[in-house]
Image (tube, rainbow, N blue to C red; front, side):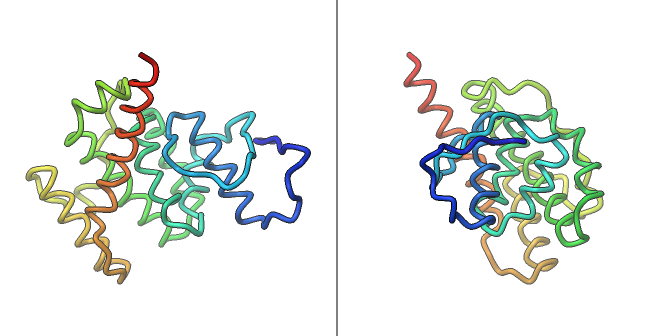
Length: 184
């Protein structure tokens, strides 16, 4: 069991919301604390890394799905669980994990100094999917743009994917800056 529920919590909360809230509670324990919550569910343990990655990709809201980028930035050791997570996902979900993982690799390069200073990140995410996704060997900004274009073509979703990827990293760093300031 990965959670506890306060006695006064409404038991009519939809299972999808409960699932999302539990994942957000687990992310908080792993240092990803920028997502707002609607309940007081608390995680008392963590599911295995591969299951958390897979479960994140299955969430109905994009704000939670894209948090996989922040999780990988905050916990580079989760890179070891990506292969097992891919095995649990549908082909479409697996592609999204590869895209988000690759975005995290690029963002780790782009925000290296801030991630080191504010997040105390040690370790690097190995680049596993850039060649498969046809990512050019250019600047991180150009790589994110190319990755976003690939994402749009592969999914048919015309969003600013490069901005979405970047937002996950900036949200993580912004929250950690605030936490560091509060701790002084």
